[in-house]
Image (tube, rainbow, N blue to C red; front, side):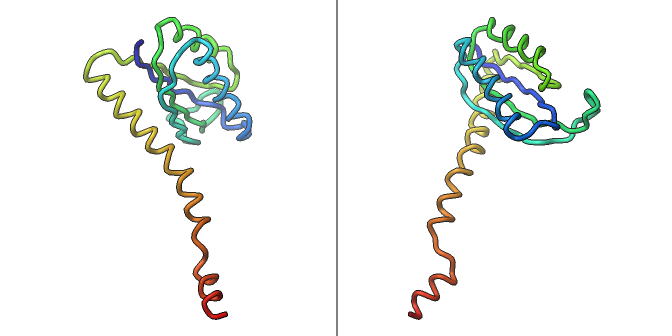
Length: 138
């Protein structure tokens, strides 16, 4: 299987639930076509370089995956049809230097995705300093 990266921009007028549903829809297309999703990088809301369909901002998402070439055709067909997606770009990684860069990008995307869930429970587990001070006085 060949390594691919697809970046797509979703309309900024959608709610968070609608954005998440659009991203899930694209991931489901990849899964249905037999692609192996390696990493996802939600870059969030960003300013566009130039207005696209009268929008100055958009929600950026990058998907890194391994798939056959026929998957790209089906994925891009669905992205063109979708009214929620205003721009998309697919990149194929085939040479050794490109594959090394792909591995670095995947590692960075996975690194950025993992710390957020781990950080939240750690802050909840440690009591506030005031609470510790009150328990030692009593």
